[in-house]
Each structure stands twice: as structure tokens, then as C-alpha cells.
Image (cartoon, rainbow, N blue to C red):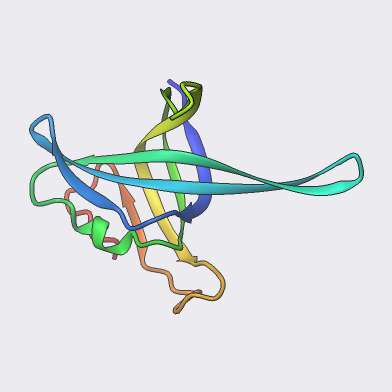
Length: 129
């Protein structure tokens, strides 16, 4: 089994939707990487589409997954993709999240050092504290 561990920032607030008789909490995570190429500093952002699958009534973690929130996630990666408006294939990486830890807020947002807690796939109650 493949496992992926990422630390990044949420691109927008999480959305809860009905899917296959369960609840899916969907959000995207931006992971920034900085490196030098030909002596120039280059910053590259990779986006990951993430899903937490929960039972009915166990979606409380979604209210803490807000735009700018820094998270560390662990999950199973699944390659995917879509065709853009120009008809080109754009590869994506989807992640089925098995655990998530709320680390803080992006610099410049309120409560930037706030720690709200963690969730794992096996938790009966997904409140992060």
C-alpha cells in the first residue's frame, strides 16, 4: 500500500457532500517547494485533491478545515486528471486521507499559531480535540 505524507495549506474551505451512501469531505492542499535552478530561486506549488470519507453525522472536522489552514495529512494517493479548456490532459493527484493534523494558519491570517488538534480515519468521533 502506498502512503503519502504532506504538509501544506488549504486552498479553500472544505465541502461536505453525499457520495456512495456516505459523506465525503473534500478540500485541496497546496504544497510549496523552493529550489534553485540555474542559480535562480524557483518556487513551485503542487495541488492535491483530498477526501475524507465519514459516516453520517461524523463530519465535524469539516468546520475546522478553512482556507489558509496549515495541515499535515497522511493518506493513499491516486493519480487522476482532467482535460482543460484547450483539450490538454492535466494530471492530478487525489488523496484519500487517513489522518489529518491541523497545524496553524498561514502567516498574516488570524490565529496563525492556533493548534486545533488531529483526526484519524479510525476515530469514532472526528472532533479535533
